[in-house]
Image (cartoon, rainbow, N blue to C red; front, top):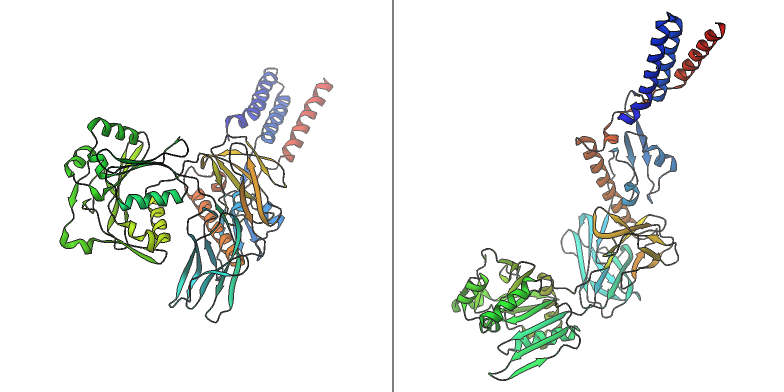
Amino acid sequence: MDFSTLAVPATALAAGAVSAVLYGRKRKWIDAALIVAASASLAVALADIRLPQAGENIVSVATDASGGISEAALLAIPRAQSIALSGDGLREAEWRDLPARRVQWKPAAADLLWLDFPRSMSLGRIFTLTVRRGQAQPGWRLQLLAENKQVLADSQIAATATSQLSVQWLPPVAEAMVLQARLLDGAGKVIAQGPVPLQVKDALPLQIQGRFDAPSFDARALNQLLADGSAILDWSVTLGKAVARSETARAPLTAPNAVFVDAAYVEHMNPSARSALLAQTRQGVPLVVLGSNAADAAMWQREFGLRLRPQSPTTEKEDTRQFTVAGAVLAMPPAGLNPDDNAAAPWSVVARDGKKLPWLWQRDLQQGRVVWIGVSDWHRYAISSPQALALWWQGAMDAISLASVQKTGWQMADPMPLPGLRSEICAQGVKAGTVLDVADAAQLQLQPRADKAEAACAALWPQKTGWMTFKAAGVAEPGMEYVYARADWPAWQKALRRDATAHYAARAASAADASGGNAEAAQPPSRPLPVAPFIVLFALSMLGLWWREQRR
């Protein structure tokens, strides 16, 4: 009980004590006793006194197959000390609105499903759908279907008992689509089937500077791949002592994503030009070095702290890097000079091939970084396996965190929005209080969240199934989120409810056990002291005192 709660009862007691002293000085002992009884009963009535309650207040909560719960149970949970739960529990959005209470719960055995896939992706990326079951099963398969029921990808029948299968597919166009996933048993019978929403967006163009001092087919293949990906290129290749081929950018490079160079270009720079290049890197522009034509190991050790060692000709085949991309095997020889497999700080290995051999190294340089690509001859696959080569380079871009600068965007953390259930939409890079305009719904205000850095969020309750569109000032493109039907993926819904319930039970247990945690949840059961008798005693005492004053 804090001071503000004690202030009013203490004032009543103090006033009663002063009055009792004044009556006592005049030897009016009965009047003094009446005023003491009146002030004491008033102080008790005004104080929030709670009495310990015998036993633990446990409320029984039952959830049906769809996750429904009665209104009476929702109202009883905040007043209870523990929850005796039966069923699969509630969704994360529903548990978040309830105070932490200890949970007594033992879920029954069930065949659960978990689906993992990106809700939105850029055109040119491979879409991967992974389905996980609660128990390993033999002979089942996973299929990805188009909107016209055509099979896009098939995992084939699992030869051994497994709990997880994946399929991959390369979207051909940028559009919002609702695919279908289907699980089949060994006899071809459908186990489960449901929608898989996917929004494919046009990739934002990269802004790339390229500087090469030795012409190569590798640099030419890289230029073609970037150009096919709509990158804005400022490209220059030295062909001879006084001959160079330049490609002027079609638009100004306002925020370059990276500078691509070959090792020869850096080695042939004068010290002042090299210092300017490193200064640009320190300001945040990554420097990506193609190391296949490196020759001056001493310069790299001196200027970049990178220790290079020659590639032994006797082990060239063993050191060939091998990559499996989209079913194709890409073999690339290492550069003539490469860092050690376990590079010393500040350098570190960023990526390894299928044989666990390193091929990409990196070091931080203030706000930027220097990346060393230690393989070559990827141009050989520009004709034989162009799609696999493009995907390999896309993976390299991801490994070095090379992406278009996008300061604003949408964040949707709800894995399965449902009609009538609270969901949440967050916008990154917008100011708090920005209006969120949801189609066919009331306008909402985006508010800051402590657990969402640089993002503002709004809660909403979708009303119908299908694509839900929304927009906000400051975010360039409108957002889209798919709202599932109540009957979609019942096994996945059940798994999500069980995961959310287990998370809530762990949160409630930690709040009850940790010192300084949720005080309300950790308090023992109690009930308020009845105040009616003390109000009656106060009234009788004051009436008795008034009657005695009137007699005199």
